[in-house]
Amino acid sequence: MQTKMQTKTYTTETEAKKAAARAYRPAIVRLANGRYACFQAGYPLPQGARAVSRWGTNRWHAYE
Image 1: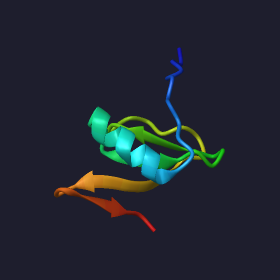
Image 2: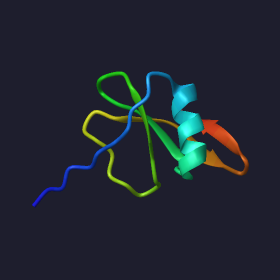
Image 3: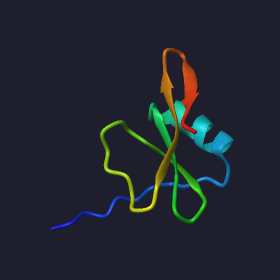
Image 4: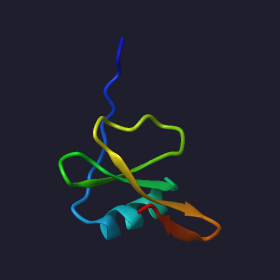
């Protein structure tokens, strides 16, 4: 049985980072549809999603 997770998405990475800080979610991903979402470490990513940045050592680290 597969469970669908409801994920709030954002139009910009900056909006996603602000939401991630409020929700204590340390990872920002870009979804296949071009929007951004924040996830907890260890959560499975949606198909087609790409890691953009993560929070660590008191700052954001970008993935290029």
